[in-house]
Image 1 (cartoon, rainbow, N blue to C red):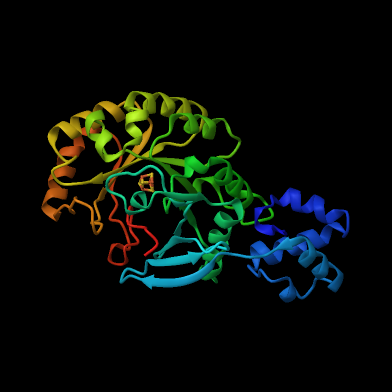
Image 2 (image 1 turned 90 degrees about the vertical axis):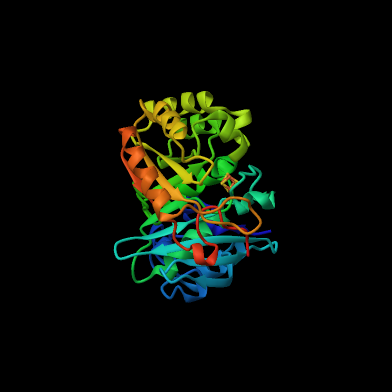
Length: 338
Ligand code: SF4
C-alpha cells in the first residue's frame, strides 16, 4: 500500500526525493502541495513526467472527501468528511473579517464521555492518522483561498492528547518552513486534562498553545461533567499545568462552559479563583450549546451577565466566547457526524 504523502515531514520527503531528483524538484513539489494547494501531480505543470510517475508509484495523495457542508448565518461552515475506510469526521471553519479559524478533529469519536458533549456520546471509533489531520488543514486552507487559513484549534472531534503522537507529527509538518509555516502561536491544542500527556507535550520540541476544558474547579462536579476527572482529579491536573508553564512560554487557556444550575454559582466562582489564582492563564467562558438528547440547557443573557459580573473577582483575563455555528450543530461540544 502506498504511503500518504501528507504524513511525511518535509525533511523526510526531501531525503526520499533527493536520491532520484535534484534538490530544486523537492522545493517545486512542496510549493505545489503547501503553497499553491494543488494536490494532484498531474496538475503540477513544471514537474517532469518522470517525477510524476515516481510520485504516483510511491505515494498516495488522498485527502478526506467532503461529504456534506452546512453553513450557519454567521458564516461558520461545518464539513462532514469521509475517510478512506468510510468513517466520518467533522471539521468546522469559522471565518471573520480578520481571521479564518479551523476547528480540526483528532479522532473519530472520543472515549472521554464528557456529559455535555455530543462527540463523547459516540464513543471512540479510532484515532486519526497524521495525513488525516494534515488533510483537514490542507482542505481548509484550500477553501480559504485566496485568503490564508490563519488559526488552528484542535477542538473538533476527539481528545487530541489521546492521539498525541499523530497530533505532534501533524504540527511538525504544518509548522515546517517548506510547508504551511504555521506559527505555533496560531495553533491551540485543547484537552480535557490528561496530566501525563500534558507533561509529554511540554517535553516535546513542538510548540503550541494549550487550552484545558475545565468547566468546574470542584472535583465532585467535574467528576460528573468530565469522567476523566475521577482518574485525574484537579490537584493532579494543576501539578501538570505548573510543569507545562515552567517549560513553555505561553499562557494556558481555560475553557469553561457555562451551564445553568450546574457550574454558575458563587461556590463555583470561589473554587475557580482558588484553582486559577496562581497560574499564568486566560479564561474563556462559553455559554453552553444545547445538544439533542442531553440534559443541560443554555444560559439566558441575564444569567451570563450575572455570572460575568461575579467572575470579576478572579483577577485573571476573562473573555466570553460565544460559540459559532450553534445553528448547524457545529459549535463546541456539538460535533457528532450528523
Ligand atoms: S469534550 Fe472533548 S474530551 Fe470531552 S467527550 Fe467531547 S471531544 Fe471528548
